Length: 341
Image 1 (cartoon, rainbow, N blue to C red):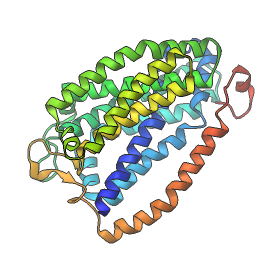
Image 2: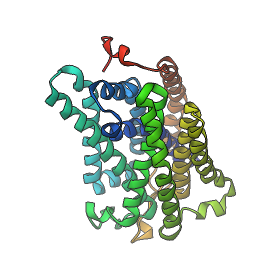
Image 3: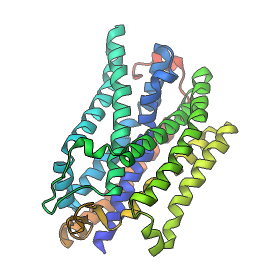
């Protein structure tokens, strides 16, 4: 029972991270296509400035839960997937540094360098996350010793790359819609136009990914066992339709909320389809790591659950306050304030 509870919490943390940091990554990777001058680029930075570090708490928490609740999974994941995880780490580091360093010097070369770090880091992080999770859904070539039989190129298979493209598009639409909430004028219109242009591409890639998922994975099997799980793909479909519907009506918050529902539904569908597996092996079923064969002791899990039930409401309350406090639209005049990025 405790193992299942922690599997659910693990899934909730990953889903929360994709929904919250997804728009940050989308803003960063689309910045060259949305912002036409230095002022507009600063607006893009400030649209995510108060939120990005809090959003990444969910990623840290997801990694911490993996380490503490499922240590064997953590060990195999961070040894077998060392290269892609290291690349992801560097992408997130350079993206984070760019937010703090860009406005420290007015020199054009300085700001262009950090703009490139923002865009490159955001794109690489979104792509790597998609590739990684698609490969986990498909099953990794892990032997009985937990060693990956392959390299980084092994992960760049058609299904993995399609998962990467899906994440990039999901986050791009999500980020474009966040921009329509946070800024006005021409930059808002560009954000709305970008989301509208990307939506049909996202739809096509999502359909292709779901179709390929049925062929190369068994994620749909759990829906047959527990029909209630159907709510997750239905949420993703409804969210995708709602995104286009509300975007056409210029209901920016509702469009962004629908995009969040799309990401949440898609992530929850994938993670619930894995249960109870955490790292499936595609070459040796006995090497598959699950919530049961890689979990910590019952005592550890029970103590951690008590701590989580105490801490998580505080985290959620704090982030809710941050989003309410900084929900206002920003303008060029706000950039003159000393605390602006």
